[in-house]
Image 1 (tube, one colour):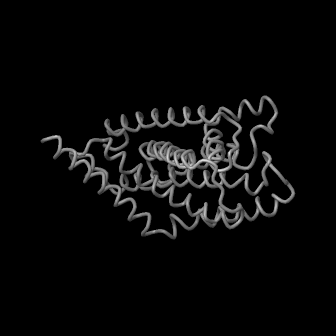
Image 2 (cartoon, rainbow, N blue to C red):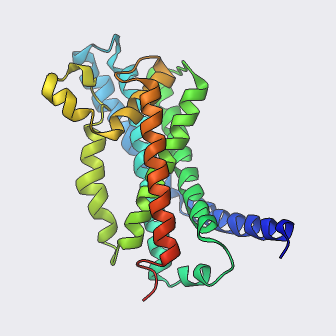
Image 3 (cartoon, one colour):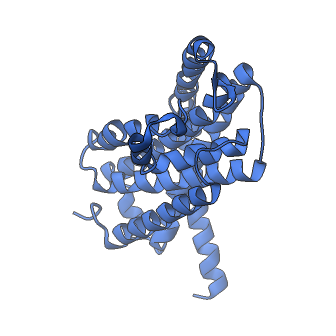
Length: 261
């Protein structure tokens, strides 16, 4: 097979997986896109409009403005992770994944297709939440390049993490354990609703171990121009996590871990 034919077949395979994922997301939009928007709207009303009046300012900004980047990032993280776990585990459960394993597609194409689908949903939800945020706090943009790159990198990282969860899951209950007991606590403690700089010394050092702190703060810098951490350190940590998780996903998929029985 020539390089040109091989590249074309890989592209068609990637497109097929991506189109299938996007079609699934849009077909059940009432389950995939609307619920997170409603949830974030409630956060804006309760924490931003009601509690925010008593909090006043955070980081030198109105509290409503301060929580906008965190809530957008919260929706991106949960939806990128949740989409790929449910989709890929569904393919395992329905035995559809076996068709991919016997196809001539290399593992990285299969992985790229599912990750791209998760990124599509994460960005779609993120944009919708952003529009809701504009109603409460208006549009703000400090650095467009940082904003877009952090959104993409974060959604990719958590899509890869969700893929690992889907590979090891044996039943549908298994895909909710990590989001409930690991992902959700880390996200809420990741500076979504507060500035890490307000924490006392030891607590602040512990908080800085949480990678989500760097993602939220880097995105906050992109929108508002403020951050509790170094922007370049945030990029380094996010990219490092992405590379490690990609290598793990590719290894597991290549070996058929949790896929061949």
